Amino acid sequence: MKFRLLPLLLALSPLTAMAQPAAAPAAPAAPAAPAPAARVKLNAAPSSPDILEDGRVTFRCRAPQAQEVKVSGQFGPELKMEKGEGGWWTVTTAGPVPAGVHEYNFKVDGMSIIDHLNPAVKPQRNPGSSILHIPSVPPAPWDLQDIPHGSVNEHSYHSKVLGKWRRLMVYTPPGYRADGPALPVLYLSHGFSDNDQAWSVHGKAHWILDSLIASKKAKPMLVVMPDAHALPPGAGWKDEYADENTKAFCGELTGDVIPLIESAYHVNPDPSARAFAGLSMGGRHALTVALTLNDRFSQVGAFSSAVPGENVAAAAFADPAGVNSRLKLLWIACGKDDFLFNANNAFDTLLTTKGVKHEYAVTEGNHSWPVWRNYLVTFVPRLFP
Image 1 (cartoon, rainbow, N blue to C red):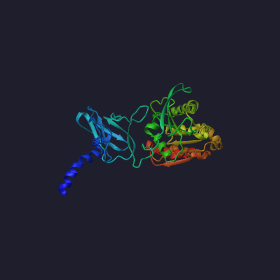
Image 2: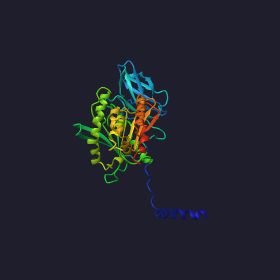
Image 3: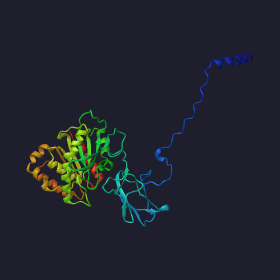
Image 4: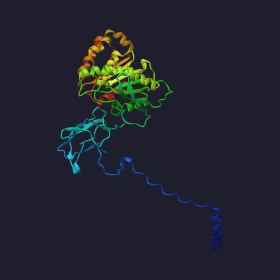
């Protein structure tokens, strides 16, 4: 039986093969997945700072003729660097660098310079610090996150009040539309020697707003970041300059900046939808706004303020009931280790004595951006209830 079936099966096999569809050609092998971009080094050019897998950080600086190079920053104690081949000085931190946005610079034979390999530079009149950003796990509000993001727009304009060209930055929240709802506005002032990019590039105000809005802790709003130096700052801080600059800044704010924003963006022009905050010199602006422009702004935050003189507040102190009826929030904060702490304590006492309602928050910390980012995170959710 087996011998009889075999010829029949062999005879049928060509017909069976003809009845079957042709086999599909083999698929080409999938290309190998590319290596992560962060690990691809097209050349061996030195880089700095390098964040290592264990959290330590390596810094590099090329100074062939130098006798001594150090790195100094907010991440820890000053470190001596060692000279190697090609005039490159290097050092790696002993342990992991804490998460945060840190300022640092190199001292080459005693002269402070920025890290020439790092494009992240703190925006200042005279840039002197580089930026080292170590993200937190989970992300902090000032870290870049996978959430909806707004935009930061640059505006150049000719100030009629000051008679010169000026620049400011404007944050618009995710989903902002010119035909959408009219949004409230926070005006945000930087400190002495910084510029209008300081709050976004170094303060991360736009990422902080993105985070607070995404987590429903803050309402969508515009944030306007003007140049707080209405007058050239000169070589250093002087009380005479502070008074004149504050006066000029407030004049430009009401005469140029607010009209520009309200013509270019769909915002609510009512004082209840206008807030102001600032740090250090910008805190002086904030307190001046609170006491002299409370018919234009209803909510004010003053961070580590260079407080104004009592003469600035004379009109407000003559009518504290009027100030209290117009100013819905005056929030003042200062760190215990801030060199302006005693001045802020005295101003708190003065406001209390004169009957001006306010809140005074005493916190940990000194006169630095890590403190001010936290203040912004605390202040913004209080706005526009």
